[in-house]
Amino acid sequence: MAVLVPTVDLGPYVDGGGPARRAATAAALDVACREVGFLQVVGHGVPAAAAADLAAAMDAFFALPPAAKLALRCPPEVNRGYTAPRSEAVSLSLGVADAGRMNDAFEAFNVGSSRADHPDADLDEAHHPANVWPDVPGFADAVGAWFGEAARVARVLTRVFADALGVPTEVFASVTRHPVEVLRMNHYALPEGTPVDGSRNGSLNGMGAHTDYGLVTVLWADPVPGLQLLGPDRAWHDVQPADGALLVNLGDLTARLTNERWLSTLHRVRPPVVDGVVQRRRSAAFFHDGDVDAVIAPLPSCVPAGERPRYAPITVADHLAAKLAGSRAGRANAGAGREAARVLAARPG
Image 1 (tube, rainbow, N blue to C red):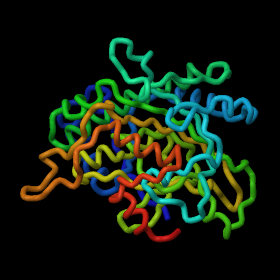
Image 2: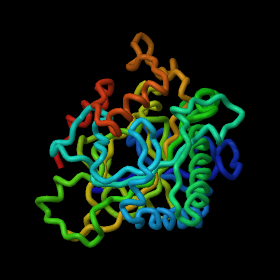
Image 3: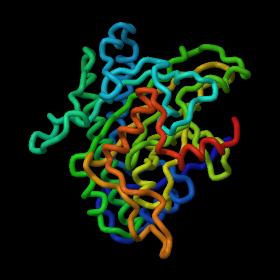
Image 4: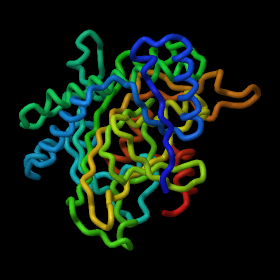
């Protein structure tokens, strides 16, 4: 079942629009974040050529022989490099095992912010490790260009967030001075053209149900089926980006900041099947996660008078560690009870 993901025009924040246009964008974003938690953005200013170059770079990397890709694996605690199919279970980031006890059928390659990118700052190597790069001509340039564009869009979004919430821009700027940022490029590893029997389709996980971990995610994806979000009706709904749009979803840290005025929306990826045949599906998720030492707690303006905040303060570092230990190292996260309850309450399908 398809759901209309609201479209928000970032143009007034990108091209210098006046106060009235910015207010309209902020109001539209607030509605999208309160009602869905997923949106797609236009007017973002990312050149179409940057997306085309990224897609070509991803195709070149994922076409490498398995041994070449496996040589770029990193330990689970280092969120960089190659992830082989069936080696992660993203739902464990919520402490929820997949019903079929099968790991996810995607392969991925991660790059991110490193100490070398910020020589003027005393950054923690554990959270800003060095990247590993494949020997693919033009790959680093294309991926680096996309990384820069996605980072810019993420910062535009946090400016809109502040206006939509009626708080100073410093609220977000103060926790993103040198943020953890990761670009995860995904390829859904069932071979294109594979026939899939309908009775088997539901047992194949492209990527298990999860919420994203940080402040905001900027997502480029092929316009083919697969991505689904959990709607307010507790049912799963298909999501596909419009031509030229980028998908955006909120992360757990923003849900904490807003005391769940805005939720981090549960989503998953099913096998990209059209008419019983697997289609190629690629995506690139840019995670804007905040400074490791930033303490995230509900904003006073988001806590109703006389009520207790729904979340205790937590550092970005501690929050990310628990999440990544689940998805990458297979240790179920015991600290995500509110999000896990939403997964367990979802309708089957």
